Image (cartoon, rainbow, N blue to C red):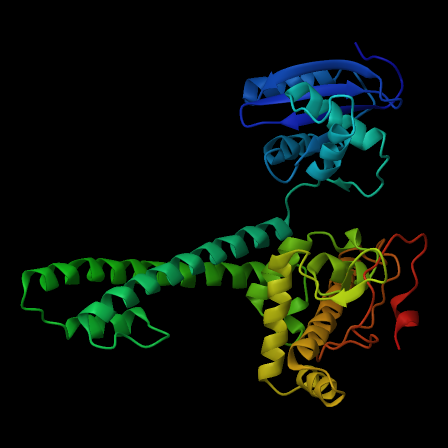
Length: 392
């Protein structure tokens, strides 16, 4: 039997084997609290429990992490699910009467209060996995394989340096390693034994290279099938496209290009207290996305075009190479943001909820008609200024 007409929030503190649930109303009054096993039977029991309230929404802590399985199952059932960041619920717990102590019940209550008391309109609504999730998975797998290959090459380098005077040069490939190993004919027993594991390590390198080639084909196919035009920008290939789309997910989360730059760490920031803060390099933000933007900027620097010309102008104006490169990264960030906004508008069939965005993205280069890259770290704003109006 459904209870009451008011909207309730079902807050969930997810765990690997169980989910702790607390139901609160709009006034943060606790209506029920219960634990459910994280299994198929436990999910059915949880839904029977939740149907007691017709008007309901879910608040899950870490809906993209440990709570992702539960969040996606709820979304598949047309439930409204909000992702409560761990930092918000931890703040509620730290300033509560529990003196920051942790328990399942306290955690679940903190998730509920973080949603109700903080009244956060910026909480992200969980959506079903789409092409962005697929691209993120492929990009993450490629990153893992690249790490495995680096370690495999380092191991081969280490052993070849012992077997061959001077070892191997940088940029060692599996084919080159095979040729070098075949030239080694040790006469002592230890040398012969040392050659065997090196052959195994080269075989591992061959297998990793094959998997990297396969994942590259998958990324290329997934990017072509995705509704994105990012590869049209200079320096942005399929791999960088997969990283950017996968990390951004929904560009409407960002008010404008300044907020997008703050998220990826290309916006300048300040440091200091008890006086005037001094400008400094932004070391925060999404470092995976920052690295992708960095690689796109480096690609532009290695080839002639608008990006390299912009970099040279910054150098001529007195900036040091690193500072000029950071300016170029900001320009690349703005170009990516504008193209993501344009793609989102096309997918929605019209202007899509991205406040203050402009559609004037250059298809021939990743240096849009924006103003200086030296823009302040964005703060709270009540109304956004169109990007075109901010251009200098």
